[in-house]
Picture: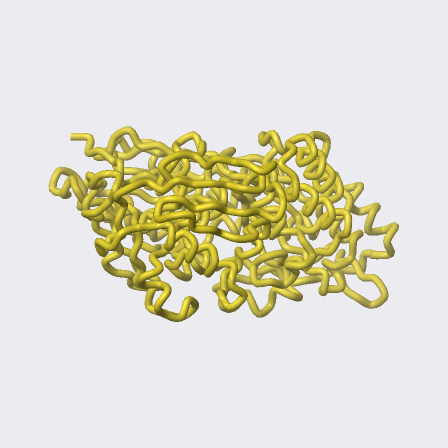
Amino acid sequence: MTSRSIRRAVATALAATTALTAAACAAPNEGRGSSKPTDSAVVGIAYEPETLSPLLGYGKDGNSKIFDGLLTHDAGMHLKPALAAALPKVTDGGTTYTYTLRPGVTFSDGKPFTADDVVFTYDTILDEKTNNASKAELDALDTVEKKDDRTVVFHLKYPYAPFAERTVLPIAPRHLAGRQDVNTGPFTTHPVGTGPYVLTNWSKGEKLTFTANPHYWGGTPKVKHLTMAVIKDDDIRATRLRSGDLDGAILPPELAATFKTDNNRTTLAARTFDYRNVTLPSANPVTGDRAVRRALDLAVDRQAMVDGILSGAGKPAYGPVPTDSPWFAKGTERPHDLGKAQRLLDDAGWKKGPDGIRAKNGQRASFTLWYLSGDKLRQEHALAFASDAKKAGIEAKVESGTWEAIEPNMKQDAVLAGGGSPADPDFDQYLLLHSSLAGDGFNNMSRYANKTVDDQLVTARRTDDHTARKAAYDTIQRELAEDPAYTFLTHVDHLYVVDNRWKDLTTQVEPHDHGLASGPWWNAEDWQPAK
């Protein structure tokens, strides 16, 4: 699909959006203005978490609103102390991390925070009975030891360079979470933490409401009442923002562009590691064929997707690492080359039929490609991918559905997926690519198995030598260029439109997960009214 044809499709979508929002556009100030309380904010997010328990994976990258980790990130994504009083002391060749805890911290129910809560949190996550899909992220951790109420020592199995990044993981209260079933207990939906906000209500699929934590060690937030409105449909989120129902929202580029002339709102862009890719299930006779995977990698016009779908708010993706990251392996960029893609398929025995779709040994080069319904970016990426694939003689039949509908089909069908973590290359790549995690929920969705990649993933996470790690990740990226696990399409900048009644808002470099923890509300507890 060319940049021009993508823009034409986007223009059609914008026309529909304009019709949906006409009434709101006619009265842009309706529902907003000085009548809104200066201590309350309502923001629109696209997704909600499945659980609010850090023991099951919630908030593992930080900024959970309800909880704190031992460490957190500042606006520049540098680690700084949170529940710890200082950055850790690292000894024994990088295998021992000692944390001194901040004194006087309490949970929102008034109970004291101690080393027991830290040990409980990490031990519970590592327990085989705990349903935490991110358990592999703590593979390096051997034991957690309480020295005294304010001292915790982590003992690692091997030097693991980014371990301190893992300690942004939120801490759960042992006195509550330790008295119930970790997987199904009430703590999963009614959590208690040390963070700046207390959850007051969670209406699944609708909203989460928070009030300022009066016991917060960092000081009482200026925003006393915070609501996260869960609005999965992009058009509806834009409409509610325009009507004044929301103070801010994340929007895809074409909808964010409709607010450019709105003097009452500001658009903020966040750089991200967030990619969109197409899973290529190895169990499918078409997507499991290496020649097909390599051909698709060359047939897709990534730059046209960036220009047309993202309106330039992003960059082409050749793997999980963005091209502007120091971890990117220069020279692994793959130019759009339809001719080479067709030759690869010809040489592999995939011959075009009368309808232009190829076949080999009676197997038609056709597969189903799912995307999440209501997600315009995924829809547009899926349609653009299908158009490019068809030019090479491969049919991708695009379907939409909820994750409940998509997940049972992931073994055989392709999915327009996403991911990305800025903290460290291990955080994303191990879960995405290691064969031991094939078919483990949303980990390694392609069920990819490549011994060289497996070996290098392990090598990279078992050393704290930067040069050795860079060499390992360079090898992985070169291997993916020859044996693609997925077809990576774009890295997506996140765009947020926010009411001007708030001042000095910032964003961080963001991961794929951009719900409660990201956007300008990554530090909503520090927001200041403009007047």
